[in-house]
Structure formats: C-alpha cells, structure tokens
Image 1 (spheres, rainbow, N blue to C red):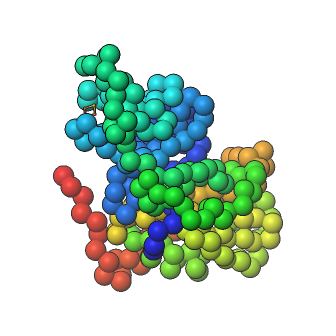
Image 2: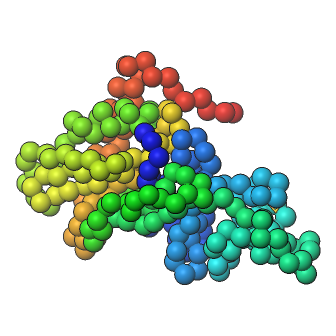
Image 3: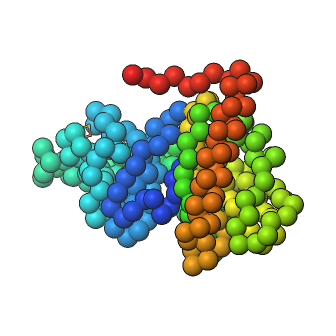
Amino acid sequence: MGTGWYPVALAEGLERGTSTGTRLFGRELVVWRDSADTSHVWEDRCPHRGMRLSFGFVRDNHIACLYHGWQYDTSAQCRYIPAHPDLAVPGTIRVATYPSIERLSIVWAYDELDGDPPQEIGLAERAPTTPVRSLYVDASAAKVFDALVLAECPPLKNTGGTTQRSRTGTLVSLKSGGDEILIAVQPLSDLETALHIVIAGSPDVHRGDSQKRVSAWSEALRREIEGAARHAGEPRHEVVP
Ligand code: FES
C-alpha cells in the first residue's frame, strides 16, 4: 500500500481530553482530542527526549509530556517548558504531525509526516453511522483484504441476501438488502492489522442488537483470517517480552 489516508481510531473511542497510542506501518502515533472536540494525529515522540506523548496528559487545548511537562498546542508547537517558565519557546520546537480528518465515525490520518495531502480523503460522509468496535488481527493487511473479498454481510435489520462488496482505498463496504457495514483497515505493521468497524445507519436503529451481531461476526472473521494467515505460512508478529 502506498501513501494515502489510513484509519487510526474509532472517533467515538477518543473522548475529549484523552489520548491514545497506535501504529501505522510500524511507526508510533499519538491520537488525541482537544477541548474543542478536534482530533489530532502526531508522531508519538516528544522532541525533548523522545518520551511517548500518548503517555502524557491532555489539558484544554494542549498535550503535556509525562516526562518533563513540556506542553504542545494544537498546532504541535511547544508553548511552555516548566523548568524555564519565562522562556519564549523557539518556534523550531514542535512535534511532527500527520494531516487528519474524521469521516464515518473514524479518525483518518494521511500517511506522510507534515505532509500536504494531494487529494481530499474521497469518502463521502454518510451520516449517521453507528460505531461498533476496533479489532486487532494477528495477520497482514493483505490477508485481511483477501478475507473481506469473500466476506458476507451479517443480516441486521433486513432479511439478508446477496452481499455486494466494494472498496475505496482502505475502506471496505459489505451491503446486503438495506444493511451495510463499513470496515476500515489499518496496517499496524507488516504482520498486524486493526479493523475499525461501523454500521451505516442511525444508532437509534442499530444500537444494541446490531452492534452485538456485528461484533460477534467480526470475531469470527478474525479467527478465519488468522487461521488463513497461519495456513499460508505467514509468521506471527513477535511479541516483545
Ligand atoms: S521528554 Fe518530553 S518533556 Fe522531556
């Protein structure tokens, strides 16, 4: 897969004033949401001594590093160094950032640090959507796409029928009757993938039973993908003790 837009988190799972760490092609990212409800995706590395910013604290419109408390505003510029409170912080001290956007209840990042995306994300907002879950799969993104090409849309509010499948970049749609689920595929590394799954349709309709059904369906899909990956000789990713 080349440079482009990739999902990095379910938007609903990222509450105001919180941060989380994730990966894209093995690179560490921090995803955080400020007090104005805007999400940000940055390199997960403090420019001071390299501490992960995802371990830090979000306060109002900045994120503070856990180690020495340097504070970065929403433009990723360092604004305050507690050990030197009167210092006018040089403009060169800033975190590397990824362009990001929210679509379809998912946070997306453009895979180029400090990049300037050549195109809009190209995913029409289909409001409303019902978030289901993020799911981690011990297999490559290629194996996930191989499985999704054959996957059946689980019946939700309709009686089911033939599944229509389509793919836009890293987003796969499975449609059957009036039901549609969307699966956004995040390559964490060469051998690990995250799926961010939403239902196209209102939470008023799909909250509860539909979410449980899609969640159970996704766990079965994970078993199938991991089984296929082992069968094909794909190595498991090494867990560092
Ligand atoms: S490593 Fe982040 S403030 Fe020192």
